[in-house]
Length: 537
Ligand code: ATP
Ligand code: MG
Ligand code: MG
Image (cartoon, rainbow, N blue to C red):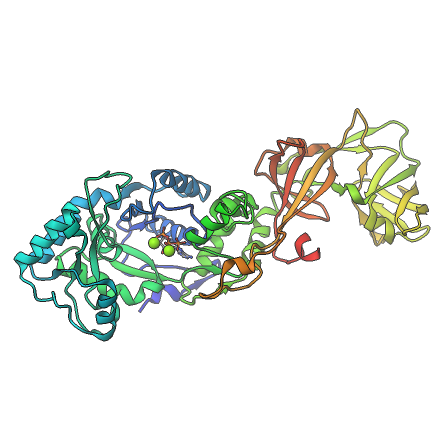
């Protein structure tokens, strides 16, 4: 039915909406203000934004606030910040609660037209009846009785609390979502916007189609776990004689080793397993952005996923390698050496005075800017490189030239403690096997910068948690790895959130200065190759 979905173009898939008219499309992203946005929400938000822009239409951000027991206004602010982090700005911001009066009147209208009835059947009994296709004892109550009970519900009285309102659709339809679903329920908890004005709240299945229709939504994007509920959605709109809305299903996003449920994420925060909602180990929008995920890579990934209807747990590798392609052309190149791995090298033939040269931060992209590289007769190299040097081997010191290894001092454990090299600038760098990074030893006039390199592991040890699994049994014991290092002084130009590459180490994002030890912190950005510190450890 969805022809537009299959059209492949060079850039990936050309997504389209059926019956979309340029300038007239209205989409909406309806988060519940009960937590922070995660990468699954990002998919929904980005697809909605994409279609609104593609058809020069409108994107509505609707806070779906029909459950006062879970919602808070502080989450509205944080969701707006999360959307900002995704470069998403809605054209209109609304609340389902803006429509509580209309929803109430429409519910009354349904009762009056015999299309809804109040019910006080016990929860278990009602579930049993719905499962077995048995009519409720109240299904044929009179309109007067139904109106009376609904009015009682509205007051939140003890009597009212016993009742709920159900749409009168079917007793035994094979599609169980059509078996007289509950559409209004009492809740005496005050609402963060409407206070104690209401004691009854519309259920999502009723509020969503009604408000979509009222707000002029043309295309409602829904995750396909609601697919069976589409006929129910259309029933509500038909029963009220309202403007029709098209539904576009997409699949729910899941990743391996990852929990995407606000409730479970709340638990991780509350148990101190992460430092907060923006922890780089977290699949929240804040967490992944802090770990170095670019908006561009997210967008590309979500559009590639767009037409798929399959609900599988995706690997993280795909999205991280898309991300690498986005940041590689813009990430400045810097050098760093781990404290525990540094080896002092004396360079014979080096200038006796320290020299400083200006070099591009990115060899292929001059727009990234320039950096200063310090040259002197004592430099630091990496232990791993040092170990690999053969006697009299000619190697290349990157951004400098060739040098010949003349001697290595080794201690009892086999660790290289010092090296001497002769500079050999006439040598051809094309002929050497090893091109290594290095840093001039720190001096008071040209200091190196103490840094911490961070890497993270998945929070859970199981690829896909099953319904009955207890998260507590699958917590990875250690998920943060910190290493002390030294970096070239140019890293001081970086701003928090900047991308960079520590050459021959990987891509990093600058996470700011640690308040306790004063060191600059850099988080390793996964590059889709699964060769991070965590997996090496
Ligand atoms: P959670 O279970 O994580 O709390 P939710 O669906 O209850 O998610 P909402 O705030 O109601 O959270 O979601 C807002 C929108 O985001 C909905 O349209 C929902 O379908 C979509 N959404 C939520 N999780 C995902 C996901 N994993 N993949 C794709 N879309 C999602
Ligand atoms: Mg929801
Ligand atoms: Mg949920």
